[in-house]
Length: 299
Image 1 (cartoon, rainbow, N blue to C red):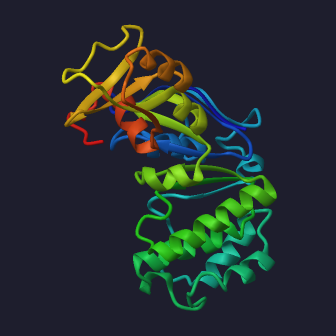
Image 2 (image 1 turned 30 degrees about the vertical axis):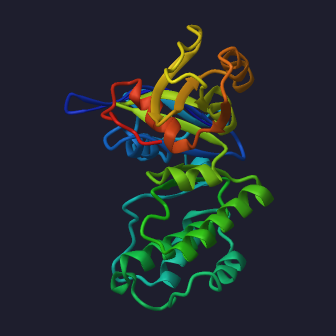
Image 3 (image 1 turned 180 degrees about the vertical axis):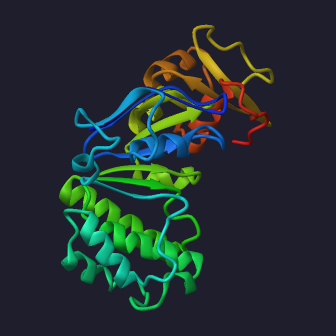
């Protein structure tokens, strides 16, 4: 289990992380989302042991990550700005990874050659950004990590390669119990692969929950009524958003689906339907409650 406990980090008087506490369960795919400047890359650099917290702690199974080679040997990461030696080829970088990651598998490396259509001998500096991203996955997944930390991992990859990469990652989660922490702006994609979500804003964690719990606790309701005017909704309902197209009303309501539908039935609607919220919609409405710059949303 990867944990952050009350982590604070300040740069030149700016508090990038303000008491961040997160728990990434073992074997989970944890999606970390938030607007630009929320602190996502900063907390990821703490999880990978690059930054030392000003206060608080980062641990893996109770052991500190910072300056702990034994713990770092169980982890691998692909940062947004992946570094490689400019003159090195993939094969040469593989030798470096094999010397620094105790579980590096040459057998896995050779199998992944079939997935990534790259030349092992070509200098990485002569490859495109997309090819370098593929090389990063090839090398990192050959490390056979227990914990994999990814910052905008598939950004720039074509749809076919994105699907192949996610298939490999989820295969490792299913077969080896790999724990994956992934930061991304592509919420629709995260929704397909993540089982836990954390929303970060202004250096604080707004919420952290399993995706199923999030979707169970906030519901989109569509309703239509016989009367021309909309009736007053039950006051005990926590309505986050309301919109109307013609005589069909759409509400975003926080609460349990069954309870909300039961209370709405008292209005005798002609149409009443509950629709699960997408991760993108959850993100918008949770940040909307934090005065995020979201105003008119078309649902």
